[in-house]
Image (cartoon, rainbow, N blue to C red):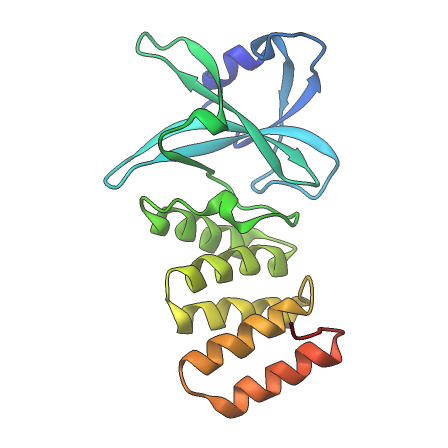
Length: 202
């Protein structure tokens, strides 16, 4: 199917691009997949997404290149329900994927500051479905950290620790979070884990 027809499939969450040899993105060929999360593969996907405002969300699609998790293209419908392409950089409201990701990337892809709970709920749902729980839990942990939801952030980063953190900085985050709630022994424990994993304090 063509990208311009993407809204005709109401069930698929993740589409893979199979042919992008056209200057007009709407003429690119895509195929539906049965993925429930953005997979850890080298590909170009269009996934269901949400344009987030304070009080509501609007359905759309976002193009994401993996494994780098680069997002630049948004697919929307205009007032007369025609499909259109827009740049993510031209958006006045944040657009985030409606599915979590199995591949690493910048957590801000899921961080809609207009209503952070939308991204948090997407990641919590993805955590129940994911194979790479460390990836999803770290995305979740960083958003919860930024939202000052310290104890929830600790829980998320602890899941990453359980399944194998992406880097030593997971231990650094846990150290800092434990310091915020006054658990000094835990702070020291995780600072040491950070150092033991190759971390260097700046």
